[in-house]
Length: 196
Ligand code: GLN
Picture 1 (cartoon, rainbow, N blue to C red):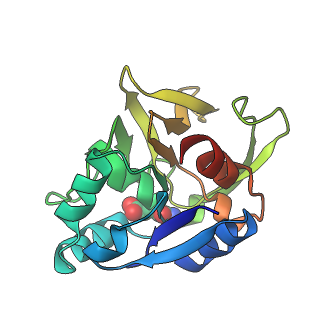
Picture 2 (picture 1 turned 45 degrees about the horizontal axis):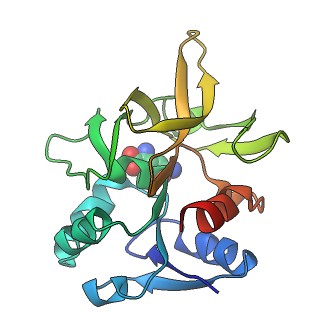
Picture 3 (picture 1 turned 60 degrees about the vertical axis):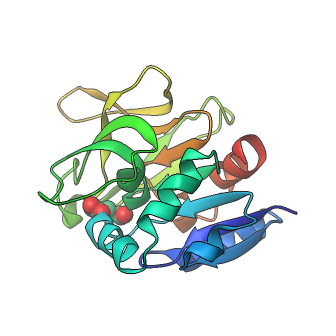
């Protein structure tokens, strides 16, 4: 059984714990640098990216985490987690730091405010051809995507532009939406089985 850490400083940690357990894997809380040892993978949950970034500094986790990811620990970030893993952020706060683990530029709160949150069925061909009910809550989208990054699902916005909302490189998976809120384990299984 794989041991999957969940960064547990803020956000929907519990929901990812349940999803990991339901994927027959072992979840463990990451709050200190030592918690990063002996993991097969890590999840950075949804929440508030500015707050999580500040807490990473306060808990002396920012650099250890960045180094662990550079050394190849597989990581999945949902929503705020996607923002934290991106190389660049549009509409972040002026002092907002990112871990820079995947070559994408993300636009924060890209779909609008909290009231503009929505659900949308997505097809994720890398997983299967059955629609995935994706929940977007004050979500980011991918504005620019690097050469070593593959989009796994796109969404066409009201203005007709296409943006990736699920993407990966070799060790990093990011989603704009929250599979941990749906009970549909396919994205978590993809991460644990194919990337970890
Ligand atoms: N808008 C939030 C942020 O910037 C992310 C929202 C979420 O994780 N649901 O961090």
